[in-house]
Amino acid sequence: MSQLMTDAITRLAPDHGPSAPSPEALARGLHAIREHLGMDVAFISEFTAGRRVFRQVDAARTPCVVEAGGSDPLEESFCQRVVDGRLPELMQDACQNAEALSLPVTQALPVGAHLSVPLRLSDGRVYGTLCCFSHQPDLTLTQRDLATLRVFSDLVSQQIERDMVLQEQQAATRARLDGALQPGRMRSVYQPIVDLVARRVVGVEALTRFDCEPQRPPDQWFHDAGEARRGSELELHAIRLALRGLDDLPRPLYLSLNASPQTVLDPRLTQLLATQPLDRLVLELTEHEEVAHYSEIARVVNPLRRAGLRVAVDDAGAGFASFRHILNLAPDLIKLDLSITQHIDADRSRQALAIALRHFADATQGRLVAEGVETEPELSKLLQLGITLAQGYSLGRPGTLAQALTAPAGPRLH
Image (cartoon, rainbow, N blue to C red; front, side, top):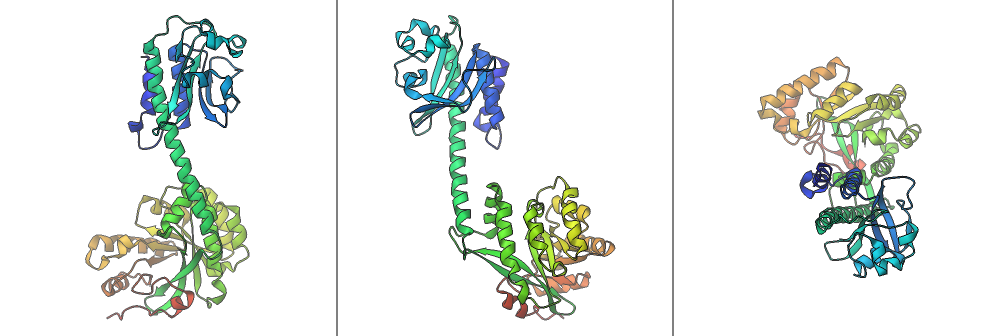
């Protein structure tokens, strides 16, 4: 077997990597099998609605009579006859086979050597075929060549099945998202952000709850929406719902909204925020992945900031990405991740990191907000470290806006 063919099979093998092979890997594999067998054309076909549809084609010369996306009647094809046994899988010279000669295409192309094997799914269904042919006969082809084609077809079948499962999952995800976006399926809850010195609420963060099936954490809904390339759509809907509470939020309290970098770059967010009192809003960047182009985010956000919008970076300390956000965006608020605030009263490393971030915030004229604060000792230690803004269950759980505004300011500090 040629090195080209070996590489192609390796790339398509299920254990080659953590993710499914790319369409480019499949194309390279199809090219490799055609070259390895010395054929003029190789293609993958699908049988659907009585037709043979060419899903992927590799040809030695272009233009080629077989084109990806094209189709023809299944009954008039070599493929159907190979699958039902009327034609052998290997023909060194198709013109020597009476059944093949009964098809006009055999002499019209012409078809010389021809190899074809079914693409079978795990449940036994025939998806289509993997075929190669040359315009001239090739008497050197052997059963060993056919065996090589079968090995490749097994890998292609596995890839096709993985793609089909993925498409079904994506369709189910889209259906769930369509349901969530219906009226009454999503709602906003608000969690108070408290000034620990003044013991009063200074703002609220809007969070989203889903009142629909399947029951799952909100972050899973947003993750699935991102995977389905509908993350901005879902986030924008959540932001619209959150903004409904702004009229009932007394001044000078602010409303904090969550948005991923992808949503920040969506023009619909700018249009939405442009109609709001920006001096009462904080935009929290909620992304754990590295951002490629901070300049684009700055281009969108800076005019809004000049009009009064404040920017926060969420989950500081949770990973390297959050530190990149801080350095590149110079946020007005830095939200200290709960992985740092929890047990901060008993952990000097957490205390040291919190102090460093507080100094950075002071130097850049920002404020530090501790998230996930749950105990009195944590509150006391945060105050000792000079961190005066916090939110967490000890200060108020997410609830209605009225509940957020009347939430107790937390346990009494000594």
